[in-house]
Amino acid sequence: MRTYISPTSILANDEMTYYLMNEDDALKEMSKLIREANEIINLSSTTIVRLLLHHFNWDINTLTDRYWEDSDRLFRKLNIPNPNSSPSSIDYNPLSPPSNIEQNPLSPTSSNSKLVTCKTCYVDKSFNEFFSLPCHHQHCLTCWEFYLESAITSDSNIQKISCPSRCNQIMNDEQIYKLLSNNERIKKRYQHILINTFIETNRLTRWCPGNSCSTIVKIKTYLPNTAQMIACDECKTVFCFHCSKQWHEPVQCTLLTKWEKKNRDESMTSEWIVANTKDCPHCHSSIEKNGGCNHMTCRKPGCVYEFCWLCLGPWKDHASRQCNVYEEGSSSKNQLSARENLARYMHYFTRYQTHNQSLELESKHSNQVEQRIQEMQAEAMSFTEQQAIYKAFDVLQQCRRTLKYTYAFAYYLYRNNQAEVFEQNQADLERATEALSGFLEQDIDSDKNNSLKLMDKTRYCDQRRKTLLDHCKEGYTEHYWAGLDTY
Ligand SMILES: [Zn+2]
Ligand SMILES: [Zn+2]
Ligand SMILES: [Zn+2]
Ligand SMILES: [Zn+2]
Ligand SMILES: [Zn+2]
Ligand SMILES: [Zn+2]
Picture 1 (cartoon, rainbow, N blue to C red):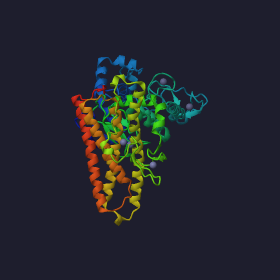
Picture 2: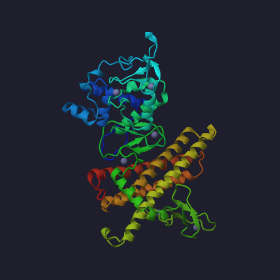
Picture 3: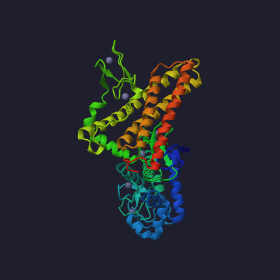
Picture 4: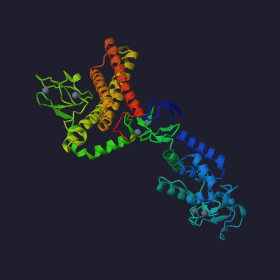
């Protein structure tokens, strides 16, 4: 188990600790909770304790409260036979030889070779090849294994397995594991089902959403409706614990859901605008975008016009333009026509989408550069220079991700003085990010000067990002953000 301090959470300002675990850690964690709960309620079957904990989302306090209130009612509700009223399960040796099997009249009478017919498969077998639960329904070991295998493979969510004679007697997990001791595959599968349910029903745990990543996150305290940043060190995914989506600061989970729904609803109208080709505003030849940087230069000989991919304005005086701000017409906001509403939405959506594309392109570029550096001769680039490049790509990606979500934030934001400060911060971060991205698109070499410049640009970008996010956080606390009505 590895411990981390969560660097950011949108609502809570206190540092939140989280752990990264694998399945084995999770299994230990699950057993520990079962043990702790059973120290209080003291049942003979830990499997029943597991079922009770599962019902209460692994919250021991709620379980024990309800249990002491009325345990009978609780067992009835969960359709579990009350273990306190069936004494046969106590002191029961799960794999003891059967005691009351009808003797097969055709079998030899010699006592140590007595054969018994299994009532399920009608095969004659010796005593020690049978097993029964406290309900005394005998089945041969082969039939048990077959029964368990089909129960476990047919229900990918199975939580309890009862006696095959349909008598409601619940099997203990230890009995299941023992009966499957020759079937490692099904045993592992059952264990995985239990761990998976444990993680998905426990409010404190979650799978890493990264592609085929099997890392598990556990947070220290549960805070409802609070976005919390988790960085998986296995697959490098940075995500929100609360909603499992890509980390989305400064937007809150509920607003992000609303924004994504809006994007789905508008997807027909927005398709045309996020195309990868646009016409050069100067010579009208078609230009394809294949890098993350939004500072474009037309490649047509004789044109070489430099412009901004987002607003198509000239790059020359781009710093003085408010590329990120939507200029509304003279009509006030709530009187915008449908056409203006769409234009306003498209302004934000295009930028949201373009930063996302840049994020993907730059992540690919980053991998290529990393590979090229590894192929270089050791003397071609110093360790410090290498680290400067890795750090720059890391900061660039954080800035892109932040910029992407600032456009969802800005779309819902009502205009006021603080909103203008936010837009200024956003413009500054955007400018710094494009400068860093453009710089990284140049060939990497080991020019001392370049390395220093790169570190400068990286530091500046990082600073702009922190300034913007700090202001957003302050706004949540001080209630600047009218329009983001979900907090
Ligand atoms: Zn059988
Ligand atoms: Zn039974
Ligand atoms: Zn992961
Ligand atoms: Zn979230
Ligand atoms: Zn051109
Ligand atoms: Zn622009």
